[in-house]
Image (cartoon, rainbow, N blue to C red):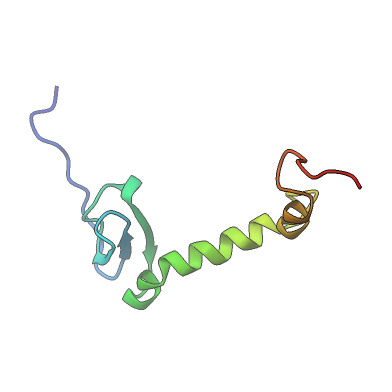
Length: 86
């Protein structure tokens, strides 16, 4: 049993966005489950949430991964086919 927790040491120039504290950090200050990164600059890390949202939209509408686009699902009544024929 370890007496001390091993603390992760960040490299200078690696920037992260902490999801808990909602701030940019140099080097991993928080656990990996609570952060996005590493990014090359503080500005990139500051835009981590926007980058994630853009990537999510790209993935949701990627025809290689989905048979229908998100817009088509909404027109059909969402996942599960709750729309009625008329």
